[in-house]
Image (cartoon, rainbow, N blue to C red; front, side, top):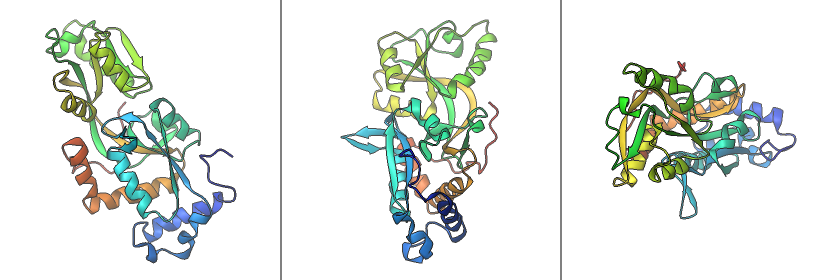
Length: 284
């Protein structure tokens, strides 16, 4: 049994425990939990995966995990009546690890898409996401969408953004333009580094991530224009793991109700998302 699975003998019991969590409400005071939930810590644990370098969602600072999702995870660990183990890994193995059962959940800023929903189930959204491009601050050759024609694009490997590039391609086609070379990277910091080194001309990421980048390095990068329609970001579990999904949704709903979600959105994203949908049917 892999380290990401619950310890021996935990399987069927854990389903019952999670159902009890949903029924009784997981975030009451701990002394209000039914006895079966108090016993879970001696029977097993959950493993959640987060990224190692994806500002402002998750990253390492002074040797410690920080960011929006890590702040929420700290609350989840505090309030849960069972142990939660965190694995901090690169993006490229994160969602695949959840879909194969290596990790129980991905607590990261994952874009919801039809393709991903074949193997993953997503929680209620934690933020809205629209794709923008970012360029070098001193690159005057790019001012409008049409100026991206034929230029080299950097994007993270395995990102849903790759599935949305036809939207940018259609925008360029209206002015007789075309997509140029596409370079994929294991992480976004690598893509930004190559942009500075002029190995690429622009990088596409979500508005949230790029606003964080430009705020941190305003003399180096400049935010461009939107290159996609609206989409949403959420946590993910393996498709069919409905009990864990309900548990995480209950947690997120409580953080929304008590104002914590909005406070953390403002802290890390510089804005709140008061009208996030409760369900999402992606169009890509």
